[in-house]
Length: 224
Ligand code: 2AM
Image 1: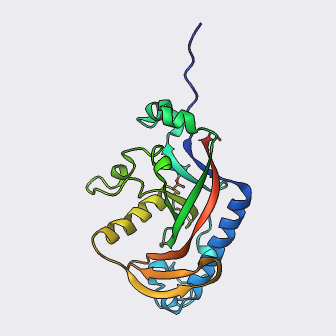
Image 2: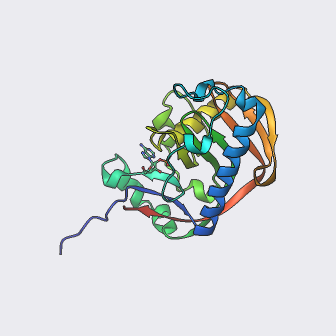
Image 3: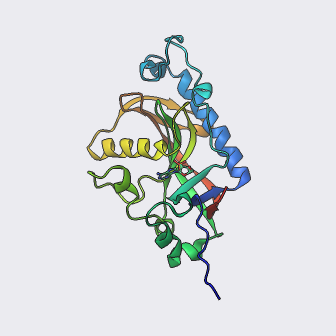
């Protein structure tokens, strides 16, 4: 009999349960609304400015025109096997064992840049077993960043920006934090997005949640 290779997905990752996905979308809207209303943000619209629009007003919900169909945290992008190392990743015992299992993801921060809006995911030791060892090096080859520091959920992207940018933007924050830059504390948010707002120049905003958001997810592959 001929042995057939397993089909490789577009990507592996943790897919949010429907109710938690709905909750996170609402939270994301709340974040953008409160960010857009911050005095400090209104004063720093320049990095977000798009042509001839009003210099002092910006609808962030419209700005981040695109949002993924299924909210998820990508662990390994495979492009159906075209990406080097996909097969090896899929063959790992840890990956096979985790497939279709439930995981709780811990979100510690929300961030927005002129390109993307996303959530920072703090992977647990269990979840780190499913994290490729080269994920950070892949986009920041010159830096040594903590394993898992690229882990995120893309919540939205500006027109003409690809989803993959969200993790790159997150690593930009992590790099700055690692080099000792705390960001400028420019405000507070309340309600479901309670926390401190830090500004890192070039339109990079991060909300450190005073209480981590927990969302339920299933580890699986996306084949669409
Ligand atoms: P994301 O994980 O930042 O959202 C399908 O395109 C999914 O794979 C998206 O979720 C996308 O970004 C992710 N993705 C696309 N290209 C990628 C790449 N080169 N490396 C890692 N993830 C990628």
